[in-house]
Image (tube, rainbow, N blue to C red; front, side, top):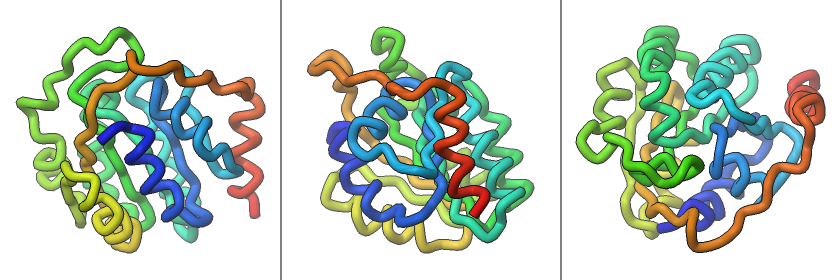
Amino acid sequence: MKLADALGVVIPLLHDALVVHANGFISRESFNLDDRPGNFYMIGSMGLASSIGLGLALNRPERRIVVFDGDGNVLMNMGSLALIGATRPPNLVHIVFDNEAYGSTGNQRTISGQVALDDIARSSGYRHVDRVEAPDDLRAAAGEVLGQAGPAFLLVKIEPDWQERKIGRISHEPPQIVQHLMEPVRK
């Protein structure tokens, strides 16, 4: 399954959730599929989407917070898994799209093929952890994880596909990205 296909399944299930997107193709693909208020697109700062999502979850406990992350981003900031597991925000859902590559920098291999990120999330204290490898299983797994008390973690195995097509860049400037997130946060 490709990233766009996976996002196409998950995005319609988000409703009014605030979504923090990891940098790179996850942000770009989601922006091009469904740019909406409540989306925060990380520009640079690899590995920090989960930390930002945790901050939002702790400060806005009445809102569902979803983090769209990548395997390379999670590996860059493994401490955030432990911190999320220790603080246990019930409104946080962490969805990791794992293509076993650093797609934005040239598709260099990550070590997620040897390191089970879902097992690390489970060991860190996430309440609900699941893993999907088949497109047919994604809708049910995403619906379940989005309906669980968090922190919840879903690892979605995808294929690297960055070379096959051009993905448009995010057209918002950083101040607009912050405003895009903050409008629904303030409601």
